[in-house]
Length: 291
Image (cartoon, rainbow, N blue to C red; front, side):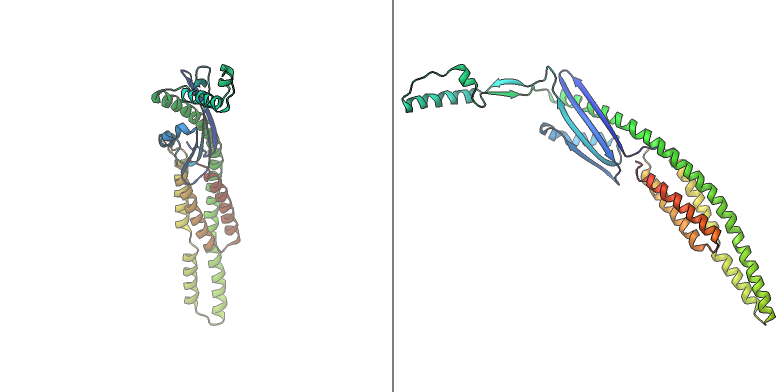
């Protein structure tokens, strides 16, 4: 079972008046790279948040957005700053003495001064805060994983179809490769006959036949190609992330295809190898987005 590295998930949980909203966006990346944007008071928890995310997501560029949602019981409440109030009263009394003017300080006037009344967040115990945050993160991860799995399933279907196409192409390549030495052997025998008429060396021609047959033999490459294909099919069923392994196998398949192409001395065989390489390139593009 494979998963895409691209996805989006959102989770929001409220527990006893405390609420967090978490959004997670992921795209493909060679490694696991987690970036967190959250309220400043959560900064000390970022290391633990990353650990929690990485227990689920093993690879990809991961952007995590955390916001605190205010509920009816967690809304900010006005609080009197007594030190500021006393400071204003002393300043006004001093001003009255200095100016020689009369006047009383009204409650409305005092309350309207800056920082006399401040809004303060409802405080929660650290355990309560962490539990609520974890639930929100887990919910977002679950939503994200559902999306990544659906895209991964579609990708797996496409890759399997292409692998089947490669298997069929390999059969044709084997058939064509088996005919190449025979065709060249016939051509060289014809050449031998002409050389014999002109006093040529038949042993030299026979040696050329043997050398050519060895150089154009792709049986080892075909065997390794088949082995890599079987491993590819098996990994698509693996429950753990296999993106890096699949990427390696695509490179190895390309290596064998390139060797087959370099040994090809036949137009039909060359066209078949080009088709194989084209399919491998499409598979490689798909694999780049697999976790």
